Length: 359
Ligand SMILES: *Cc1c(COP(=O)(O)O)cnc(C)c1O
Image 1: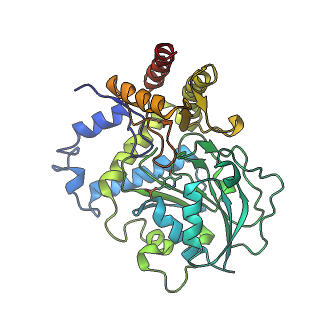
Image 2 (image 1 turned 180 degrees about the horizontal axis):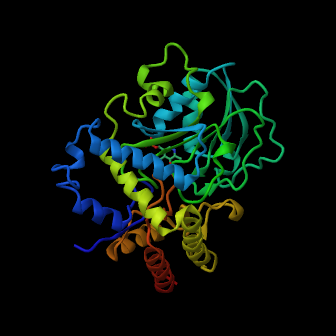
């Protein structure tokens, strides 16, 4: 069977050269005589892999020395709990609410501390990012939490709130590695791997040193950042194969020219799709133009029947998983780093043909 273009929001497509390299090394990794999946996480071969993954990620994202890189499990959703447990000081946190994931993060924090909503786009069904210009962060907040890219609604921040000396904590699950970011503006950046880093099972946490070591005493050992920081992510068995594949993805992006180049490619791909939407009399975008995501592109025809027809016919020509989120409907094309530009061009060609056929 021919490979399809998989527009899934996550787990998402992986770069083909990465899969091919992994295939070559699947049964016997270099001189190890066994697969990476079979190796001890304390072996020399795996030590080299995890160290290389950290070095490559640091290089890609330009991560300063006073930040730790942790390779954890539990998904972005476990971070929703780890953050309040580890950052608790005054018992208060500020949130900007831009969709389902920020709501989920806030609900989990609320179990441990008082939460305060600084701004929200709920009034317009999360179709924009609230202005951060005149936001007043609470002086006694332990942290400010934002969702950098809203996977379900298709919006992204283009400007960050000014949090002064309060740590800014960002869920970057669906935009990490899509463009350069200034790490020093954040206390914590976290991401589940299955969108832009690698296969599911790995969660990357980039955390400033001073935020480690202050967890609430009742924090489970596995939910304490200090546990993993002290053990260099080898306190227990980490998701070894996911880390290996993530490192292949890091090498692939470095080979392309790093995050600046990745960003240029992403802008080009997103432009092709957004231009097609804006120039169409059938398809419409669903979010405010200035807040449009580079990674998740939602669009609708305005008719549920036509949406279903479009999704079904697209599937027949190898364009898969473009159905919108289950509670939202319409279409959503996720065009992460690994989606080839050819996939986006095919989608746009098909949109034009569908529009012509359904006049
Ligand atoms: C997918 C996603 C999550 C959930 O990630 P898990 O790893 O499944 O827990 C959280 N936040 C954002 C922004 C996401 O896109």
